[in-house]
Length: 92
Image 1 (cartoon, one colour):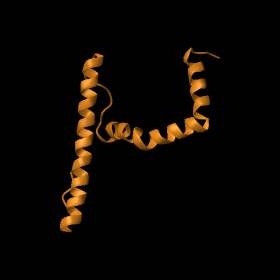
Image 2: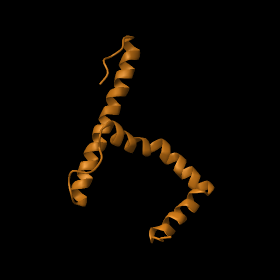
Image 3: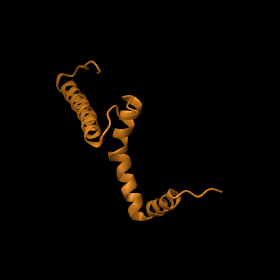
Image 4: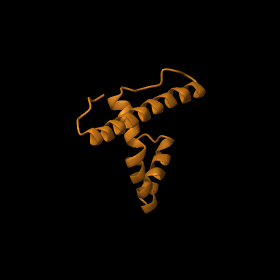
């Protein structure tokens, strides 16, 4: 059996997630943050950063987040416009 230094950290995190507070935090992440990351990876094809260095990675991630938010705004605007005019709008 091999013991890795991070095994203790994993054990502590699992114990923390088993508490009521940990479950609530995890539940809120599942409905707020995680879907965005999943969308970026699965639907947008983002697997790894193209740039190196913390500052450049931050810029790259911020651009991805901006693109995600613009897409959401467009989708909501199209839904609202569809309700107003009563006709479907072409999908993006």
